[in-house]
Length: 59
Image (cartoon, rainbow, N blue to C red):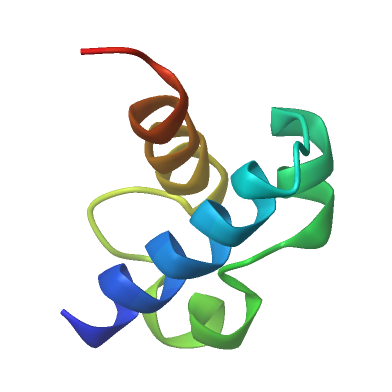
């Protein structure tokens, strides 16, 4: 779970800076974990996109 929270925190910081989804993806916030988790249930780009959208969509 540390992976999930760390990537979320990185994406949140970029959202707070006003970065677009493309800018966040280009920054590759999951890079430190990709070697270990890339073959998991979701690929890194899709995972980061999901986090970004959850942080930028009003409830």
